[in-house]
Image (cartoon, rainbow, N blue to C red; front, top):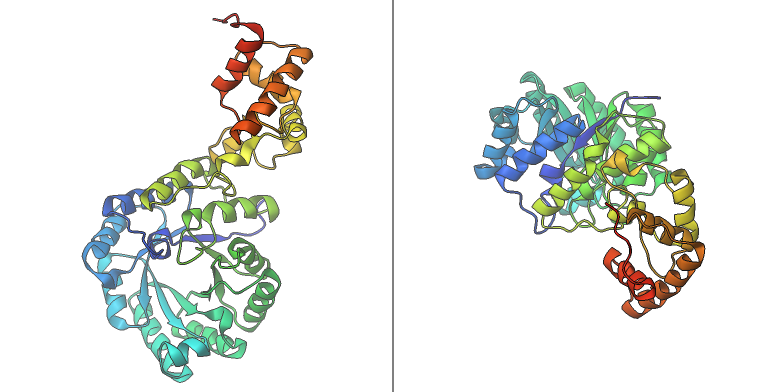
Length: 380
C-alpha cells in the first residue's frame, strides 16, 4: 500500500508548548515523548535547549530515554544555540531564520545577505558537529520564491539535510501550496518539510498538498496544538495520508485517543467531541437514516473504524433518531421490543429531547420504557 515514505516530525513539545497559556511539566514532557515514540513518530522536536533551566533538563532526560525516534532541538541561526542543543544529547537540530522581506525588514531589521550568512555559518557549524540538520525558512509562505530557492540552495551547500517550509502565519491554501513546493522541489534537490499553521483552517490540507508536490516530511502536533489557531494535527495527517493518499505509515493509531486525551489534559485544553479523527462524535450516530445505515453496515457512514483510533461506536438517541436505533439501543439492554413499541418510545424520546434540548441518556430512555410498559424483565 505504501507509495512513499513520509517522515512525521512532531513538535508538540516545542511549537505546541508555545501555545499561549500552555506549559508542560517536565514529567509530562517525558511521558508525551514516550507516547509519541510508541505510536510511531519518526522525529520529536523536544524543545529549545538555549532556554536553559527546566527546558534543558527535560530535553536531556528525553535524549536519555533511548527512544527509536530521532530527537531534535530547535535553534536560532546562532552558534551558541546549537552548542546548547548538542550539549543536551540531541541527534538533530532545527536552525530557524526568517526568509520573508516583512520579517527581515521589520523583525530582524537586517538584509537578505545577513540572513543567508547567518544560516550558512550556523549550518556549517552543526554539520561539523555531525548533526542531522533541518534549516527552517520562517515565514516561507510570504517569502519571494527566488530568494527561497537561493536560501535552499545555500542551505544544501552548507550541509543541510532538509528545508522546513514554514507557513508561519497560516496564509496558504492547498493549490498555492502545491505550486510553491513543486517550484522549490524542481529547483533544489533537497528534502522539504511542511510546517503548516491553521489560521484559515487549512493546516492539514496544506500539509497534504505539500506532500503531493514532493515534500518528504510533515511537521505536526498532537490535537493540532500550537501558536494562535495551531498546527496540522498528528492524528489528522497520519490518517489522511493512509486513507486519502494511499500512504500507510504503520503507526499504532489505536493509541491516538489515549495520546490526544493525555496531551489535552497536560495542555489544559479540552478535546472537542467534534474533533476530527479522535473526537467522541466521530462514531456517534443520531440521525435515523445514518444510524440505520451504520447499524446495517458501518461503512455506509464511517470510513475508518472506531477501534482503529481507540474509540467506540455509539448510537445516540435523540430528536433525530429512528426506530432502528431505538431497537438497537434496547438490544444493548438485552430487551427485544416490537416495531410498534419502538415507535411509541420514539415519540416520547423526541418530545423529551426537544424539551431538554439534548440527546437522552440511557437511563432516561429506560424511564420512558418503564412509564409505558412497567419494569422490564431483567436478563442475567
